Image (cartoon, rainbow, N blue to C red; front, side):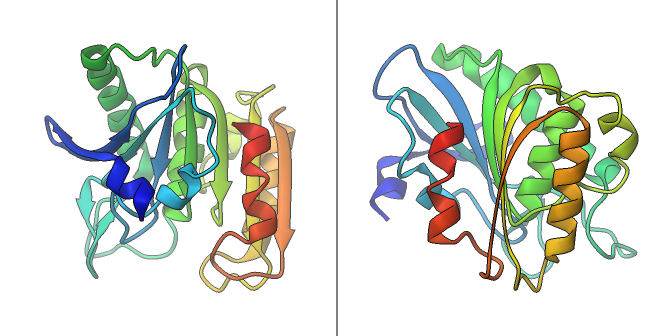
Length: 217
């Protein structure tokens, strides 16, 4: 919990987030995107081994989830299944807008950012990179999936040369491992430089895969 305590809770316009400044310069910016029903405190374990020149922001999802916490997908009466890219597009666009406006107030260069997302947050991470590829340097998608509807954009090579770390558990009962394998194939087909870690775990990041994050960031 010390990493959360060290990260200041901030508000900027309609956003609530935790921020841990970089310890050295030149600083670059990394966003940690929580999953369904998470919040700005959920992802801090992944900040443990990040290099000192990384400034870390963990934003709270912009919609209330049905069962508590927050979500990146607007809740509607007919909502079902995993979200598609069009359902996540508003959050991806809002996230980039937030980064642009807030980074100017603190003097951080946010021309290119890094992303780590878990579960639904991984789907938003993919969506943000697919829709705003010029803004993303590298990303990690943990226990997540490329949202449906992204195939056509990916086929244009929009992620060519992007370092992407993907981790998934074969026993994941929330996001089937087949979706992760399909995601890797789509990413590689788009020209991304994918490192894939698959273990026998469930809907979480194994210790083995956890170490792989350091190779991306």
